[in-house]
Length: 263
Image (tube, rainbow, N blue to C red; front, side):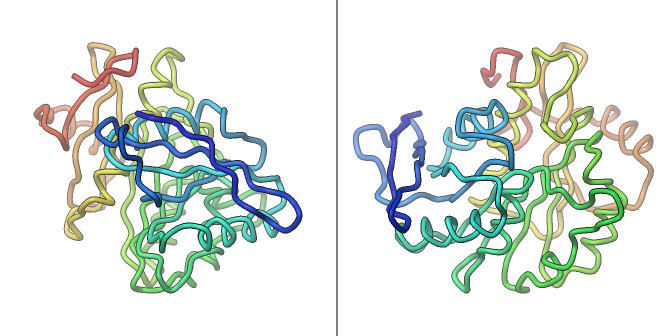
């Protein structure tokens, strides 16, 4: 992976960005990124959740992540500035508040929305209307922690069933809103895996298989189940089924050790 600092004009200032590209493009980095991404309200480009995600994603595809502030309206305008600067980007995304900004900044050219730790609710407020307004032509992937206090998984399912566009969901077992897991040493590998899964999804997806889980196996490795058909069942039965049919180690079903290296 190659990292490159990029500066994009924004009014009288500039937007700091980080372009990460796959190893095979180190001698000839792409002029445009495959995914435009941004961090949460209190995050930065150096936040572990962001760094882990782009480390995994850019093993396969390039990603441009930009630094923003904690104001949603301003972040959305910054998104638009970055989009205009790039060569017709078709994939937008972010984590937490950044995911909300990505939805609001989507254009007619947007094909994919990557919503990591989407903050669906806080107190009595439910942030679902902008999701219902997403164009039917856009494909959306949610990456949510099982313990995310800002995104109840059952509530998310209800919202997804009412959205006009096709949606996919990755559940990270044991993860909270920040994608932290226990033991803490596995958090980096979890973040890397989420990035890899999203990159594979952008490269190609199956609309008959829209559910998948990332979990820690008995050997202390982070593993991806691969995409499964959506089924209405309890979390317990899902876990039993997953454990009884352990996935093979293929590009779509693989493991990552605690040091972040794929096996």
